[in-house]
Image 1 (cartoon, one colour):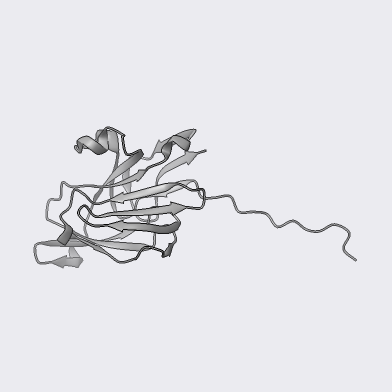
Image 2: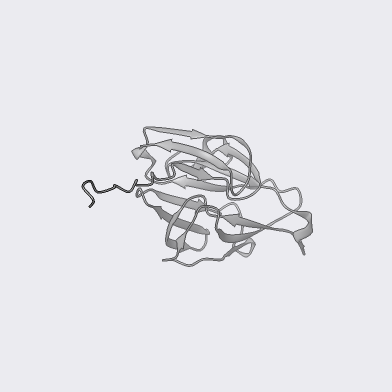
Length: 165
């Protein structure tokens, strides 16, 4: 006979945003994009992707981009290429490829799909000696009590930022 019911522990949400690919992370406020660096779109970081020379294509290299968060794709826009992902704790995360031209970005997921952090969401054609970044921006970052960017080298499975709400 069971006197006390066992509570199942609820899993706390992952309060990290991931690097999306191998590369270098900087604060968006340090980026060269005037609009993004102003913070008007929200807090976030820029990723300068590194490429694998074994994945060379004509005119550059292909870089596989992973999702920065677990959530659901709410929308994908083109010109500029932007993906909006909504997380369990209702964050709206923009993955913004506006520094790259449309032919350089190949989205591999569609609106409505559920994602896990690190899941392949896009392929990005990066030119030799790449000096362009894509941006991961939390549109409703005003919910944050604390937001820390983990600057430096990153990878798809490595946290690039952490937050508290």
